[in-house]
Length: 135
Image 1 (cartoon, rainbow, N blue to C red):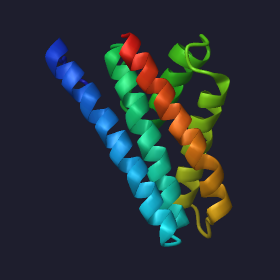
Image 2: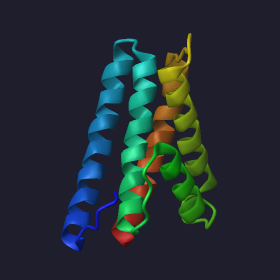
Image 3: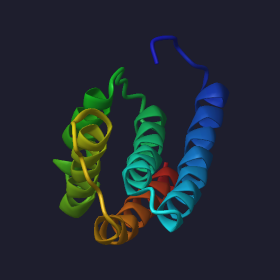
Image 4: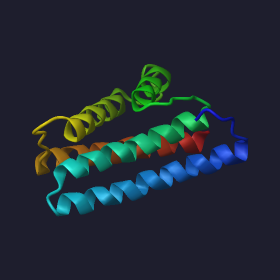
């Protein structure tokens, strides 16, 4: 975000992003249950993206693109051991899978992929929520 937020607005936006992460994880199950696996991987990515945005916002770190969020997450949290390497790999994998499923011809996601990525996304979001609680 380019504009400067007061602390109350910042915290409200952080809470909203986490709510969106939780709601979006619910969408994953709906998409997958109907066999819409490309859409499910998209929702997995966005759930984690919203959580990552919340973490960056709380820490006054700005990123204006998806690649920027990925870079800032790696630079400020994964490389410093604040988030695990597994969390970093999860976000990077979802970033790549979402991009290919949205933009590449003949991209194919399947149930096995969603079944393997969903618990990893749950852990990623839970880890970010824990960091947000710590302040």
